[in-house]
Length: 431
Image (cartoon, rainbow, N blue to C red; front, side, top):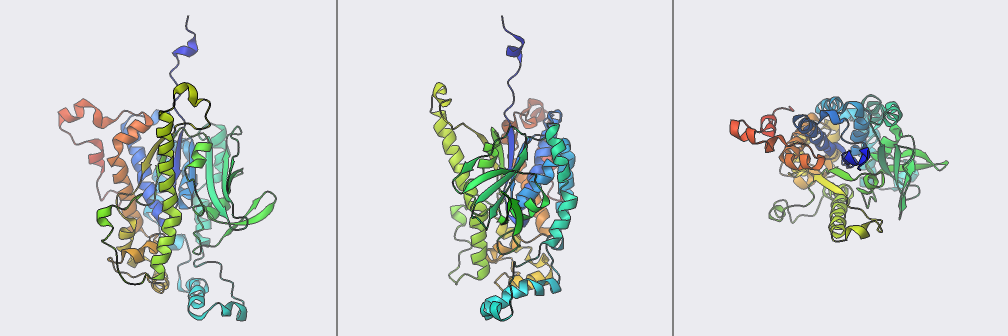
């Protein structure tokens, strides 16, 4: 005779969300999240509660991740709130963009680049960063109510929040996590995890783009270490979500995973690269390359595991992970090139000194600006792109969550009505 437990439906796999870094590029993630909320509503899955009990983030993605986690008892409402904030962003909410502040920070760097580091000895100049992100510290208090997180974990709305940063002091890559007490820390080569109470300082550390924003001091193992952007030296971006128990992981990127071959020649020039081009190239390496490699690694492991007989899988430390990647279908550098003129005049002047122009044709020069363009013209366009890309993958999203796909319902085609995503994908909806 079967017992009652045998009639219970199998538990749904634990779902994790991974939001990567990229400064202002993180606006793309917000558009994706809004689309997920709309797809979820149309699929009739609102009763399931928070769709992401595990949320991991790095850099600006850590800020979005934490804001989402701190409102996990009202996923839809929290997403709308994050959308409204990003729609109205201005650079001076993230860093000091007035002329006086530029003289204190950016101009110092420009002087050192042009005159020489000898001035550091003569004038005792010790520049910490290109920009001062003090305004971001104030914004985080409004955007991310971290004091709610322990309550949400106790009530089961969240299983874990993870924020990753890189230590300039020790060279280690650290994932700080707060979550269920049963979650154990992990250690790998040059990277490890630390159970901690996530604070706004962790978010400032994780989002401190190298050279651009100052390092943030954090207490770890009884000592003070200085941390910068978590995308630096991040060899396995997907790993924290897996270690924290994610069995299916939605990954939202901040740049195209691969440049199409037929577009590779469009932005190629024979002139010597400007400092802005070199800096943009370096930041792309930090923020984009590791994710593409890690996604390929996870998929390769999944393929290998599928070839292993079921009875032998239990003997392996590896396990298959259901992974869905949503990444920009357009080049974000090209979008940024159209909006460089939106930057505050003082910031535009400073970036012009290293080769960022206001020409929409200067895509390579705009790569650096793409991380600093916290202006609504740019962020709203990225959000619209994220929304459209996620809606385009609506069937995959529904399959990933095991939701009912409203587009697949036979009566939708019979009635002759436009599909749900088509009705929602108004390019002016976010403007």
